[in-house]
Image (cartoon, rainbow over all chains, first blue to last red; front, side, top):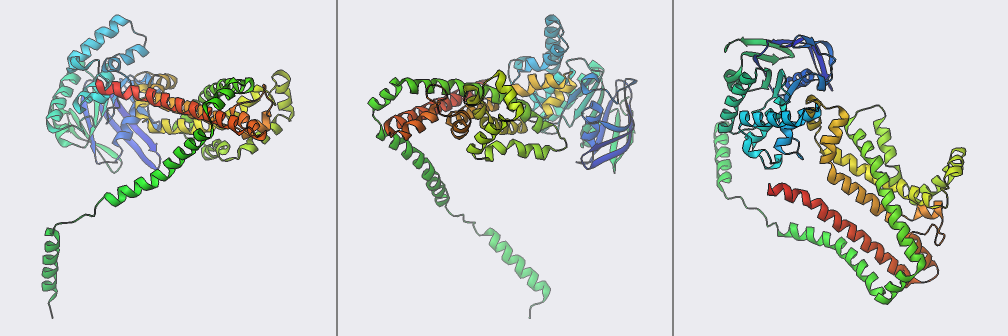
Length: 218
Length: 289
């Protein structure tokens, strides 16, 4: 479950006050809004990359307002993928588990499982500079899911894909999020994406977040 | 007299007619030729200087200089001190560059300006300032344990004071060019800031580290003013290659001075070539994948 309760956040001169939203466990929430309205700021605050000045952030019922990003158990996919340019795809999928000092067998099994789930078995030994946009997004998604987070945050993950790849990745997202049962917050400005994926649609306008559509797929 | 509506219609016709006329662009040749002429002035001057040096000396002079015990000592001391200076510069430049690139804090602009002081100060002033510093009680205390003034550690310190500033600037630019987004992702994956730095940022900054180290090494090799003031120019003791050039010139042995200068040029060219070759290995590999 993701819950923001009257959260205030500031990024330079930009600020948002009294932001509240709730996504029940295992559901797919989409946050929509115009460019530069604060969607990414909300996502970064949820991930612990920006501090909340006031209010509470609850993740699976636990107060995570003051937890470090590393302790929140969130898988994060930024807009540009932000793949680690010096690492192979395999290393991307194993990185979070290596940090947690997981055993080699567990890491290998998880990498194979994720590669199969995302259809990236053939590119495991390649590095990001040689990957297409769709492949990069799959790798970024795999990396975010590798430590089996309960929550997934996606920042316009389909923004820079061509129409066919967009359609494919959309279907993949829907399937993967259902299969691994994560609670997801997906930021976008595309109503088409929201309609395809969301259980709940939120809109941010004039600094306020409102629920515009609840449980259409539930 | 034409009515406003008629005027508008005729203006719009004119615009349409102009738009359909093929647009002609002037030749790019004068621009490119201008660029080449201006660039070649500087490149030719560098080449002419080196050729003049080469024509001034003979292989015999060169070998005679290499046979000199004092010059061999200066070469050895230069190579060792420059390598230590380059390593020390990186040791400081990497954390300062990262700190300045990633963290906002009060007084950052002042610190940024301070870091440039060794670049803008005349080298002699740096030497003099170091000399005065080691006349203070703190400096004397250090000298009790390690002799710095007019000794080899003083050479390294004088080289480091200048070379480090260039390394800091290079590292700052390197870290500025690496998006912090990847570190943020690493934090969400469970990394501490230190793990994100060592595992994500530093591997990406590898070429910047190499460039900073090379720059520091090359700056240290050419450093003369601060060394002369702070460490003196004692043969077989505090003599580095630029000191040799100065000492040989001062006794009128221009051939030896030119030979040592050419050795310095060769050392610098070898280092630059090594860096270029080493620096290009990675992208070639990446393209092959």
